Length: 146
Image 1 (cartoon, rainbow, N blue to C red):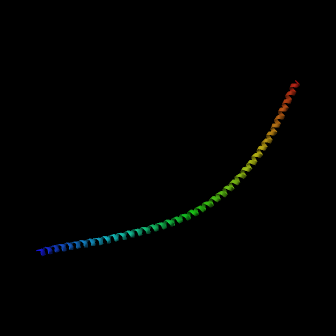
Image 2 (cartoon, rainbow, N blue to C red; image 1 turned 90 degrees about the vertical axis):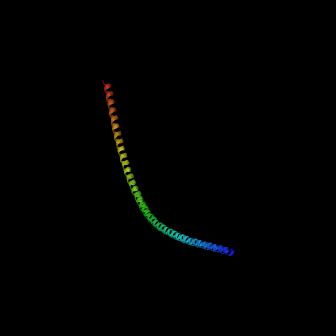
Image 3 (cartoon, helix red, strand yellow; image 1 turned 60 degrees about the vertical axis):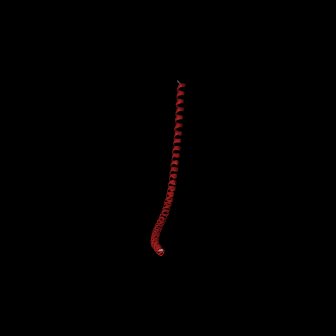
């Protein structure tokens, strides 16, 4: 009976060991599957990162090209504007000289007219004084000989 009890115990222990072994195999299989799944996710993530990195590099290169084009256009526009500004400065200087000449001519004409008016006024003033003196003399003579 002791032998039967030992045999039963051994059978039970062997059954448990087998059950534990199957459980460990199932756990090992699940861990392998989980490890494979994690590897696939890492590969997918690496692929997405590489794709995103490539897209960013392409976008950056496109933007750098566009910026370089804009810099060229800006430099050309600046050069054109500088030329136009210089042309306007020259035109302004020429117009200023022309206007200064016209103003000088007008000033001379006005001075000449003012001088002519002064002479005419002086002449008429002297004539008027002469007329008044003559009138006074005539009045005084008329009063004296009356």
